[in-house]
Structure formats: C-alpha cells, structure tokens
Amino acid sequence: VVGNKEIIYMIDKEGTFWPSEGKGLYKLGLKPGEVVGESVFELYKDFPEMLDQMKKTFDGETLSFEVKIGDLYYRNWYSPHKNLEGETIGLLGLSIDVSDVKEAEKELNESLQREMLQANIVRNSPLAIAFGYPDGRLENCNKAFSDLPLVMRGNRLSIMPIKKKHFDAVTKLADKNL
Image (tube, rainbow, N blue to C red):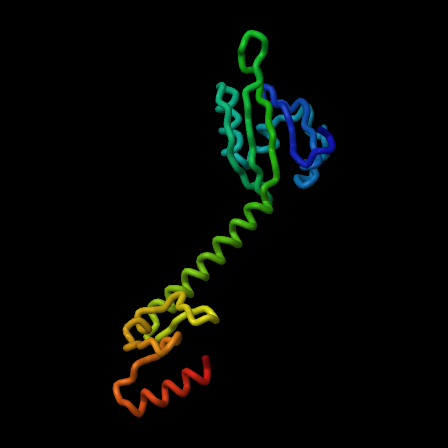
C-alpha cells in the first residue's frame, strides 16, 4: 500500500484518521501516516462537499465522487467500515489523482468547440467551400457550394457557367488544377 500512487485511508466515525497511506499523499504536501490521529473535519474544513460525502458514508452509504483540491482533481470512493455487529464505525477510502484525465477532457472539449465554430463558419459562409479527396470524391460542402450549377466532366466536378466562353475557361482551369 505504501508504494501505491493511490491514497488509501480509514477514518473513524468521530473523524479521526487511522491509516493514511500511498505515494499520492505527496502531491497534497503530506507524507504517508502523517495525518494519523488528526481530525478530517479540521484538515478538510475548506472542502464541505467532501465532508458531506463522508457523513453520508458514516450513515451507511457507499459513494463515489470527484473533488478539486487546489489544482488537483481526485476521484474518491468511500465505503462504510462496519464492526462485527454490522454497525458503521467509520469509512474506508480510496482517492486517485485524476488531474491528467481532467486536463485531457478540458483539452478535448476546447478542441471540439473550436471545430464546431470552424464548421459553423464554413457552413454559413457566403463563399462556396467544398472538401474532397485526392481521387475527386466530395466529402462535404456548404450551402453556397451546393447552390452552384455543377456538372460532371469525366470524373471531375465542374461549375457550369452560364455562357459558353466561361465554360471553356473554367474547364481549362479545372483540368490544369486537378
């Protein structure tokens, strides 16, 4: 247990830490065993959500929740610790630092928001925009592009101009660039 990155602990119903082990304590500025005998209610007085969850566990509930402590996020599991008569005498706890996961989720959400914004800009642009594959298949286009008069020339999609002289110019340009 001492070598684990997780934090494993037991707290009696009065709020006193018994064992408190794991390398994960170092990120909180604590050493394994350092808080043994101390009050959880005093140590975590600035984290009422966490204390509320502990009280629920003292009342017999098994819980799982996340809490932010400073810049760190922890996933916590609390289970009632019962005596031989089945009475809850405290809780058994496991806490795991999930800060890296939270940061990855944040970056993913920001990336998705950027992509949605870009897609919205393209979709609503008055400019005709299309995305395709090197083999000529069309992947996606906006409304302005789909409103263009288009014609297939062989395996190429071309804009069909209204006048013949424009058609020849566009065809030469399309053949040159494709």
